[in-house]
Length: 123
Image 1 (cartoon, helix red, strand yellow):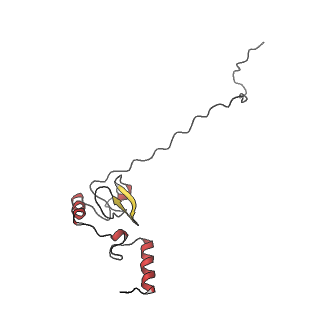
Image 2 (cartoon, helix red, strand yellow; image 1 turned 120 degrees about the horizontal axis):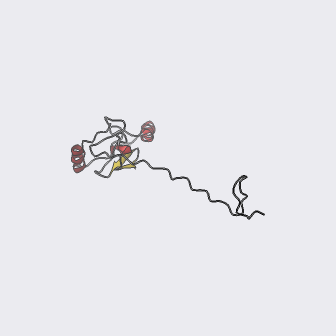
Image 3 (cartoon, helix red, strand yellow; image 1 turned 90 degrees about the horizontal axis):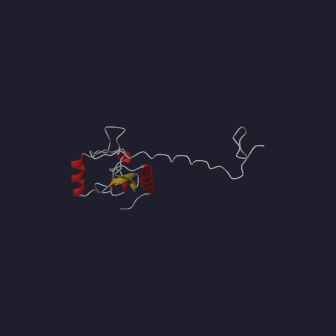
């Protein structure tokens, strides 16, 4: 089977926009899933669309971003995982705390602010 130039352009465009399983079988998000992984997904209640906006695969500690092109992967089972997906084992990714600002060290020989106590003896 040969691909026409038009068909090739359409397939390339779909890949760039994020493929769906039915459009590009065997590539990226539509990578075939083995039976063991299918069973594990079913056991964990995996869905491609999360019922809760605040609990999505792409905010889970077990999510591996971009492992399958537009889709990610999961540490619990093989195959592609929809970033907007969900399963019962979802765990929030801890928020990264900003590092506290570094304390400023006084510069040696810096002039002292006006009104500050001087360490020089007075006459």
